[in-house]
Image (tube, rainbow, N blue to C red):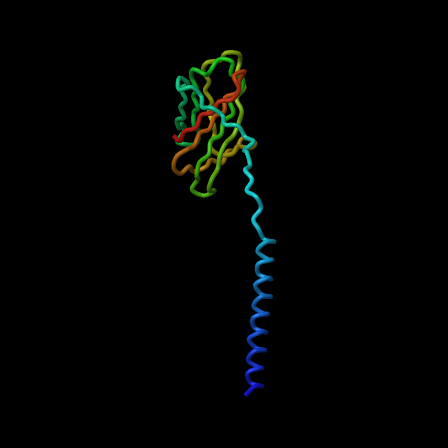
Length: 153
């Protein structure tokens, strides 16, 4: 009977020691995997203001939807460049677009440009079959800095 009691004490003691070792191991792992201090990343891009509402911008389809006419009136004075981007979904090619830059004369107040919705090479054009709206983004650049305009037509 005494031998059986000693075995039980040894087993219980061994179990307690094993449990303590496991607890120490788990707690030491938690300390090593502490989360690093939260750091805030400040964006490096600045917010560009929108162009004044007095500027009139229109985009209308011409030639059966193969081209559009971009019209900009009351362009802010001292504007030197206007970067444009048109993006649209097509039936066969997915998302497509057109980008370009308009260089203005001094104090030019009105500008019109025909823009082909597709690609042209060596006098042959392949037109996109536009599905849905066309998103127009303009960036006006002058001695005042930069201003943007965005709208869907």
